[in-house]
Length: 117
Length: 117
Image (cartoon, rainbow over all chains, first blue to last red):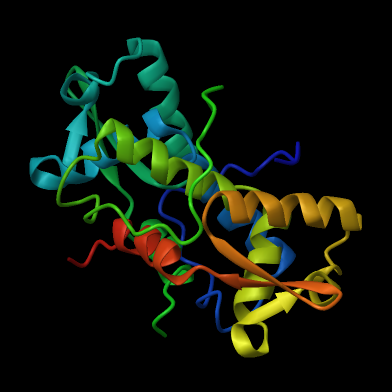
């Protein structure tokens, strides 16, 4: 892993790239997409992401997903990383912040890895 | 990023998981899939991966893809990481080792991120 600082992306930024089989990634796009993959490169973070994505209604608050074996501040840290990578959006309602998967960012990652096109 | 050591996977191991929207990942599957995402979480590694995937015939040797601005040993290091994560297969022919994308591993990542199912 390089020590290059990966950028903080806009929430649900538009996907950037054709499938990897069709064209080689530019330097800029590789930095952008690596930041998204990095957000999913931790098992606890990936579990939190899947818990939100599969939660009824497609959204979850910290209160719904903290049973992952780490402290609540660590859960919050991971959620912030996912948000900074553009993979989650968040909305405060009352006491809680609710998180949703950012569909176009995730679709962009899936499209990059689509070997069928 | 946790300091948990991620596992070395078999080349082109079978994909494990339904889409994240349909079910929450198990601990075991999250460790396995995080290792794959980690392999793509570096901009140079992701560019090398896209260079191999988009190379004519779907395969490339180090000689084809070393124009990424890092030393040849660093290129080799990144290729080894991609292979250990199960995302590339390799075959020595004559002087060179040729690399290919491992289709079922990559399809497994794309399927996990498929929000349309």
